[in-house]
Image (cartoon, rainbow, N blue to C red; front, side, top):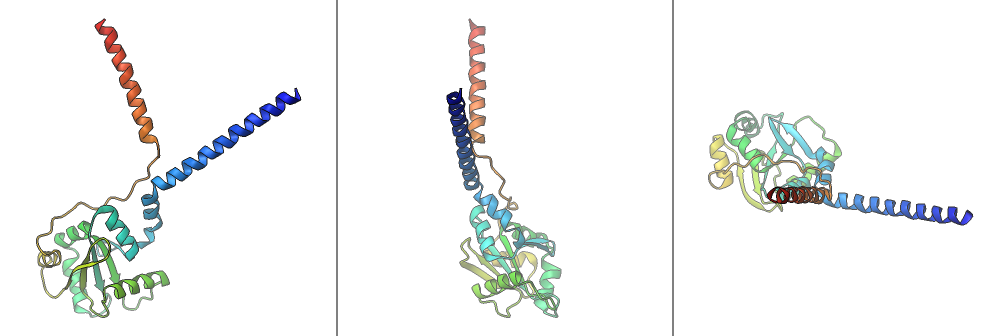
Length: 216
């Protein structure tokens, strides 16, 4: 009796151990499968809605999104809350236009806005300093820089008095071919596709057998 209990205990222990190993393996597979989703969720602090546009405020995050979605990046440099004429005209006349809104979703839009009278948190200030240094912006407010997904500059325009269509055309180097907004990565369940395939295969096999019987 004692031996039976000991063996049963060993078997149960092994089963529990196997279950734990499988759960750990599945968790690791889930993390690997959802790396893009986890990166996106972890960087939501770098998304800001302002002037009717959804912007990113961090270079690393914007490059990740650009690579993941095969897009270029549009960096906009402003000095709002001041009498900076170029900044004010961009905000008032350009950002609300359909042409600029189309560009803001076609590219990964990045905003670096040095707001007058506002002391940004350390994280925001670091992001701004990185953007200014990367593209040598200094006090050239109203500058818009187009880069590839790795951050290499393609073209820059400093806004003066162009209309929105003219500005977008100049930045793009020609007529803009609008793209739909970027969709955020979705959470995936590993092996779910394999389970669906197996279910469809079983259903198909069952259907095939039924057909044979009818023909007979």
